[in-house]
Every structure is written in structure tokens, then in C-alpha cells.
Image (cartoon, rainbow, N blue to C red; front, side):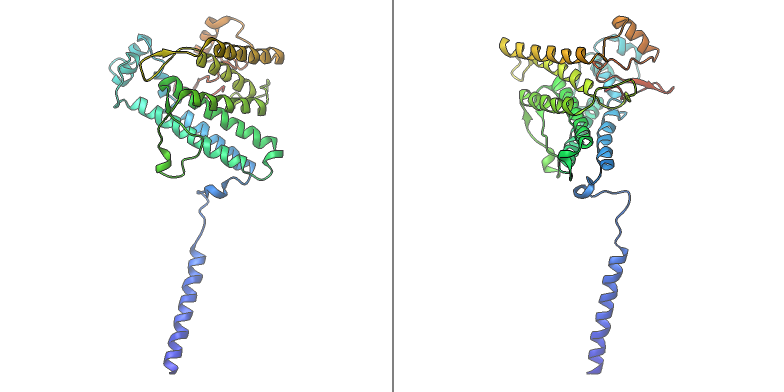
Length: 309
């Protein structure tokens, strides 16, 4: 009987020891964040926003590959003869599903949108959000970047899969095409929030972060693009009726009046030709908000980097 009691006591001690060891050995790694508990400070909220910028500045996106998208003539083609036939295909409008440049651009635009969705949801749910202008400004940056990427998708592909909720599972990452007019509505909503919660740029502002001027400038471009012809899946070129087009044009004028009233931003003094020559010499004009995705050389490597949003 004593042996049985001793066995029970020994087993209990062993189990207690194992449980204690398990608790001691379970540690939270410093390099990993729990998504549900991540948004607990302004610093972490800003890190999340920087993560969206990172998707844009990726080498396979605006870091380099995006440069091939507007390649519409031999200016780009000739410079890369016999080096990358995929770029030639883009310049000559001969695309297929095996083009890795387009695949990378597509993937990273959706990566950025998904990061923006996570960031917007996380920031808006933070304690004290309603009274914190800094948090609202960070959310405004995230909304601008989501709108910027969604606008890219609509310009390139028209109706595309789109959602404003974070993909929390593999299944939720996929969806059907969404009508471009619905996406335009979301883009405009994001940009209006952005312009209402971001400060205007000043001489001391960094050119590498979104400002109110960038939001207003992109909003103008969205209205103008939406007012024009658009190729639909049925092969027809269509545009809004005249009353809706006038509404969009009036909205553009209203945004321009805001720039005039502020007085800081303006067109380049020497005109477009002088601006192009200055840019080619790596001389940047930081008061021009309409170049809402101004890309500049970095160092001597001649790679392109995100800036001047």
C-alpha cells in the first residue's frame, strides 16, 4: 500500500515539474507580433503604415518593374534589346500569362492593399482613436496608399477582385471581379478621408510621405480618369453620361481651387520640358504634388525608388 501511495506522489511531482518546465520554456519571440494584439501604440501603427510603403518600393513593383508598364514605344524597347523579352512584349502589347513582370506587379499591388486593409482596421480599433489626430493621420496614409494601388489596378485591368477587409485565411484571399464603378467609389471615399486628415506639405516636410496635397492631386486624377472612356468586358468603350462627367469635372476644379488657396504647391516654373530635364539630372521639385508617384534615382545603382507621394 505504501508503494502505491509513493507511486502516486512521484507521478504527481513529475507532472507538476513538467507543467512548470513547459511554462518556463514558452517564450514570445521578439521578432514576431500577434496580429490581434499588435495595434497598441502609435509607434506600431506607424510601422504598419511603413509596411504598405514597402510593398510599393519593392524591386519587383515601383522599385523597378513598374517602369515597364508605360513602355509604349521603342524608347524603352531599344534600351533593353536582347536583355529581357518580357519587357519587349509589354512595349509591343503582346502579353501572356507567363509574363513574370506583370505577375509580380499584380501580386505586390494586392499585397499592399491587403496590408492597408489590416492597418486601417487595426488603427481604427485602437484605444483613444476618435480623439487622436496622429492615429487618424496614419490611417489617412494607409487609405491613400490603398486608393493609389486600387487605382493602378482599375487603370490596368478595369473590373478586378477587390475588398476592403484583411485576408485572414487562404480562402478569404480570393474573390470575384468587382465592378470598376464600385471600386472608384471606394477609392474616392479613401482619398476624401485622406485629404481631410492629412496636413499640407511645407518646406520642411519629407517628400517620402503622403500629404494632403498628394491626396487632393490623386483625387483629381481619379475623377478625370473616371470621366473618360473605359473598355469593358463586352468589348465596348463606354463613358459616364454628360451630367455625371460634369460632376467629376466640377470636383476637379474644386480641388484645384484648394491648391490655389493654399498657395504652396504650383507647376514647375520652366514648364514640362524643363521639369523633365531637371529630373533627368536628378534635380527634384518638391512643390509639385501632381506627380503623386514621383520616382527618383537612388545612389549610383540607378534603381528607382518610391518618393514624393
